[in-house]
Length: 298
Image 1: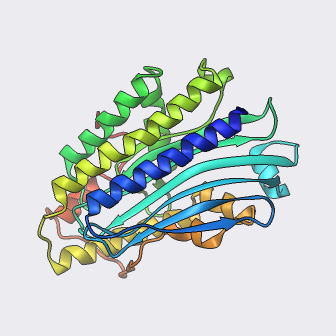
Image 2: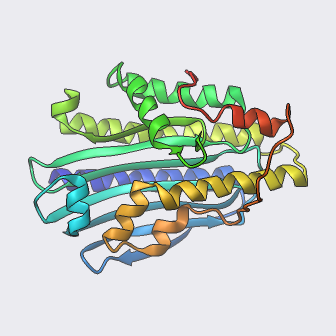
């Protein structure tokens, strides 16, 4: 089997398994699927869940696209070739309960030719309320996954996530981070492409044990109208990051991707309140104090 076909099959399997597990965890909502084709080549499977018992809106998307790279993307990637192939799974979950965190995962493979190809991706957590035990649990699982392949991966990729998922104009991180990596290839990892695919799949397989546990811990937590307002404010920060800084959003728009799939990451409801200041000593204030780079969670 051609290597990229092996990646496609692995990513489609991950999409299927995650969707099945999330439907079981939610207990009410089912994913709606839309098969789409890209005008320039390739397509994907968009799967959206809405109005669930746990998930207010979420997407688990698979795509495999190919064609000609726009000049802007060639410049950003520092490549000269035109032809490209890209495949990946992209996930964002926006829960209904403010004490269940937003989660994002993306695993991807990009190829232009035998010499120009790499893996990228990551998984990160954006709690509306930072719960220390949840953040430590999440990071511990990610470290376990990374350590199976290289004991240096977690520390490097955790720092990458702190730096990448940073809202510069707010001077705060998007959440409690996770791992983020890009352009992984044998030359900079010491792993073969087969091993890097195994790592990418392992990251994908970390999603369900991590998120289903956090759902079970927090899904029945009671919350007030004021805490829901805070949830909407935190969602607005998430939207700001995705629209201003997110590289995947930019790549999708610049390669004529499917708009509904690209923007599925945006929350169903968000609010921008002018100059909101949390009460000193409150849960909201405590959360803001932990939206910083460099916090050791694992």
